[in-house]
Image 1 (cartoon, one colour):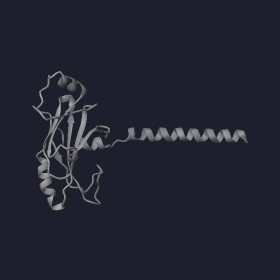
Image 2 (tube, rainbow, N blue to C red):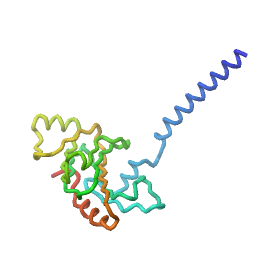
Image 3 (cartoon, rainbow, N blue to C red):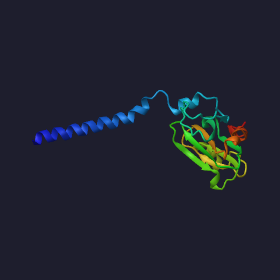
Image 4 (tube, rainbow, N blue to C red):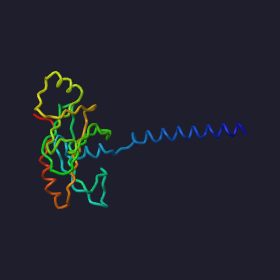
Length: 181
């Protein structure tokens, strides 16, 4: 009886360990990730307005069809990156993700920023140079430090009415993103 109980407990523990190891390694084996999908888009150092998501159509980035999106991919190894422009007077959000899809920084218009977006994205070495005043930045720039160099920025706009979507996307296309020369 005790021997059977020990075998049962051992089998459950071994099954649990195998289950956890499998779940933790499966994402590492995936060939297609959010990062590979973003790398396929022409969004390096520029804000790409994504086409509207159609309900029921394939949605590989899992975007909300009610929102308009702009995406920009940056590499801080090439230098600091900047996101600059004026967004519409409606709800918007900006999120910076690393290549694993983890949010590094996020803000919305409800943070008291208003419509103007002026972000400077730096890695730790660039932030150190910034602190030593070896990198010039303009006044009012919101400085964001990122732990990795490969990042993507996602800007979300929420048009109050669907007829306003083209105007919102036009304003979104005027946002600058990437390294400054």
